[in-house]
Every structure is written in structure tokens, then in C-alpha cells.
Amino acid sequence: MTVGQALMEFLANQYTVDGDHRERTIAGTFGIFGHGNVAGVGQALKQLNELRPGLMPYRQARNEQAMVHQSVGYARMHRRLGTWASAASVGPGASNMLTGAALATSNRMPALLLPSDTFATRVSDPVLQQLEHPWDTSITVNDAFRPVSVFFDRVDRPEKLFSIALSAMRSLTDPAETGAVTIALPEDVQAEALDVPEEFLQQREWRLSRPLPQRDALAEAVRAIAGAERPLIVAGGGVLYSGAEDQLRGFVEATGIPVGTSQAGGGVLVWDHDQNLGGVGATGTLASNKIAAEADVVIGIGTRYSDFTTASRTAFRNPDVKFVNINVASFDAYKHGTQIAVIADAREALTELSQELSGFTVSADYAAEVARVKGEWDGLVDEAFEPSGLSLPGQPEIIGATQQASAPKDVVIQAAGSLPGDLHKLWRVRDALGYHVEYAFSCMGYEIAGGIGAKRGLEASGDDRDVIVMVGDGSYLMLNTELVTAVAEGIKIIVVLIQNHGYASIGHLSETVGSERFGTKYRAYDRDADNFQGEDVLPVDLAMNARSYGLDVIEVQPSENAIEELKAAIATAKASEKSTFIHINSNPHIYAPDGEGWWDVPVAQVSEISSTQAAREQYEREQEPQRNYLG
Image 1 (tube, rainbow, N blue to C red):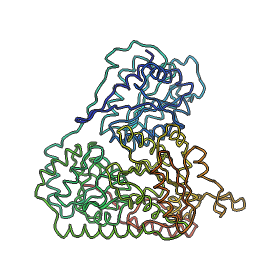
Image 2 (image 1 turned 30 degrees about the vertical axis):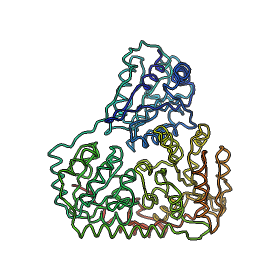
Image 3 (image 1 turned 90 degrees about the horizontal axis):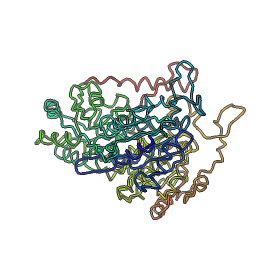
Image 4 (image 1 turned 180 degrees about the vertical axis):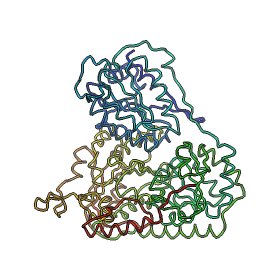
């Protein structure tokens, strides 16, 4: 077989096993072909399609970055048990996947990348699209994948395929180390023949590791929690990937310990659960952040503790706060200098904690305080969702209308801009898989491709719930061409495009740092002022753009009935079997209720602009609570 043929057949026979659950690790391969892979991986996929249909499904994409985004969306819906491979040609085809690789690794999501490389033999040197370095001729574009991958290797001899492929699968299926796994494939080696042992092509199972907590570490955690007066759980994506929602719910119901969630942890408890205070940190709810500020023991379960989760290390203000960190990855478990790191699977750890803390409950006063702040926040969200009757509604109203028109199990998809923050505060998650906001890399352009990947993942599981992609015009313009993929394959997604005529999130942030929305508006270039700050809105018609791709398009015109029309549009989209694009204009200056979270974005220390001077003074005041967490 050729290296390409052997690799594709190998991948088709890999299975992830988690208890009684068994599924294909690599569900299929996305590919965009060029001279670097058309005769290798491309030929192998064609041969399998003709001779053994269904063994390795191939799907087209319109952008290499989007292939990886689809893989991540798929993996999220499969709780990291399955993903897709992405095959690209040499040069720009390969480098286009770098952003996707960084996103997958940042989010700890499995994705297999197969970038083609230039000739290993250098018989034709330099080839078209080859990157050359006079001081190191061994460097290629693909070396850029090293820092953004959890595993990288290059099959520069056919015989290396076996060990490289097995090592790649180990990384893909490792809960503690998964992310972008990159196998670089020189274009000549892909087409080279080698003798392939039958054992390499047989079905192989990769049993997911669910490590139990060590007894002494668990005992330390139990002592710390039992002695806490104001404990708080910070639940991250690890709870979801472990399938530990039932164990978390049972634990908090028995103990009364409240829960704040990271972006990745959205869905681990339904929104109206008594112990669910919603998002925590920079984009968190007022309820979560009030409790976090005085927490004496913070129990992190499956969280990376990003700066948004900790509000740039201002969220937890108790001077004696301790961290009990439960994580399958020691890298995350030891964050914030904790001496109580429980390196274990979330589900296993919660099961044992429930047994060891049987009989422990928070005080009646603390429980009453938790209930009070939750009730107050829920009331603020109700008010934010009330239609204002404005012809240009604010984003909170739009989120509320989308929420109310959706079904309990529908999935909302987002990644960048002001929407992640507002969704973290406002979206009322009603299902474990109902919330997917990519916020480790917060990649503009992820939304549509990730939404298509999520829908693929659901369909592969026989789940017909709708996927609702909410996206601003800034992110939409970054990477919208994957809508063609949805049309080509009949993959149904609902896109709610919020037209802000610029970058709403960075526009607001620009104001807080004293830059007064400079460079954040979509406006015609003003030659006299030499900027884009005028009032001439660009005549770009994004609804027409989506219509040109073949989607059904519903335009909600500015009016006092815009919110009701949006709800009706979503109902129409849900009833349809096709992808639908809903366009609504908004007022980007209407903000969600304040959650009193802070994000550290430095402000110029000196400036001749008064707005920046004022912003610097405010920054220094807000920076005062910031400190290192050392235990």
C-alpha cells in the first residue's frame, strides 16, 4: 500500500471506548486537495470510496481552517470521544490550518491534522509553495504546527508511519493531553509504497483513562471542604467531558454548595437549578461574582482557570481563600499554587467526594444568601429580556428572543465578540449539550464552521435537535464560506446574524481603554480625517451574501416589532428542513446587566489624549484587588 492508503485505512479502524460506549475515533476526513496531497491522501480516499464505501467518509470544505473548526464542534457534541481528520496541501493549505490547530489545543479538544509537506527526498527543490530558510533548509511551513499541537511528527520515511500513527492516536484519546494532533506528510512519501502488516489495519480500541483520586489528596480535599464556611464550585468543561453532570448535581444538592461555571462548563447544571449561579468571572453573573468574592474554599472541577474565569485574578478576594483543584490534567490541577490538587477524572472524584462528605451541608445563612443573589440576578435577566419596542433592539433582547423561541435541547454556538460575554450571563442553558461557546481561543469565524461540525456530531448520534449559530457581522465576515458546505450536504443550521456595522465588543472595550472606538466601525474611508470614524455605513448586504450561497434568508427589518418578528423567524427556521439565515439589526450600545467582573486589558500609562488619561486612572483603581493566588 502507499503511505496515504495505509494511513486512511488505519484511521478508519480506530475506536474510542469509554465504559460500555464504543465509537469511531476518526469519524471521517475533511480534505481540500492540491499538488501536495491529491496523489497521496486524495488517491487513498478515492480508492476507499470506490472499493469500500463508508469505511472512511470524505467531506469537502471551503477553507482549511474551517475543517479543523468542524472537527472541534463535532468533538464537543461527542464529549471528546470522536473527531475528524483534516487533510490539506502544502504551503498555504497547510498554514491555513494553524489557527484551527491553536483553537483545538487551547480548548483541549481532539482534532487530527494531516498537512502535506514538501518533498522528503528534495529531488525537486524548491517546489511550488515551499518555504525556504537559507540558515536551515530543513524547516518547512509545517514546523509552525509544533507549538500549537499536543503532538507533532513528520513521516519523512514510509517505515515511520506505524509508530507515528499509533503515537498520534494515543494523544488524541488522552483526556489530559488531547488537542491538535499533527502528522506532517511529505508529498512524495504519501504516494510511496510499503509493506503493511495486517495487524496495523485491524480494529484497535483506545480505552479512555478515568483515573481515580489518590487517597491522601482526596482526604486533604475533604478536610478543606468540610472546614469551609463559604465554599464555591467552579465547574469547567472537564465535568461535561467526563459525563459527570449527574454526579455534580447529586453532590451540590446534598451539600448545598453553589456552582459558578466557566464558558466550557455551560450546561453542567440546568440554569434554574437552585445551586447554579451561572457564569463566573469577567463575563459572569452578579450572583456568581458576589459569592466568589467572599468564598473561602474554591473547588475547581475540570477548569483551566482562564483569566476570564478568575476575572484576571480579582474574582476571589477572600485573603485566606484556598483552592481545591480537581482535574485529569496535573497542569491545570496545580494552578494558583494550590497544595490540594486532586488529579482525577471529574466523575470519579465527585462520586468519592459525595461519599466522604456525606452529612456535610452549608449553613442555613449561606444557603439563604445563595438563594437571594440567584433570585435577584434571575430578575435582572428577566428585565433584560423584556422587549423595549426600539426599532434597533439591544443584544440582550435578541438573546432573550432567541432563547424563548428555541427548544430546551437546542444548541447555541458562539465564539467571539460581545456575544460570548452576554451569553455567559444571560443564556439559560437547559441541556448538557445545549451551550457551546468556544472561549479558550475565542476565534472570530469559528461560529459557522463549528456549528456545522456540532450538527454533524449530533446527527451521527441520531440526535435531531437544532443548532443555532449566533454571530455578529465582524465574525461572520471572517469566515462565512462554510455555509456552502451546509448547503452542499443538506446540513441544517440556523444562523442569527446580529448586524452591528462593526466590532461591537472591541468597540466597547476601546472606550474603556480611552481609544473611543477607533478602528472598530465599518464605515467608508474618510480621506480628510484619514480614518474610518465617519457616519457613512458601508452598503454591504450580508443577507444577500447568505442568499447567494443558497440559504433560506429571513430579514427582520428595524421596527418596534423586531423582537416578535425575530421569534417568528426562528420558529419558521425550526420548522424548515434547510439551513436558514436570519438577519437582524441591533443597537450595539445597549449592554447586558453588569456582573461586576473585570478583565485586565492594559491602558496606556502615559497619553496626550484626555480619554486615555481618564481610562488609565480607572484602570489603576480596578487593578487594586488583583493578586497572585498562591494556595
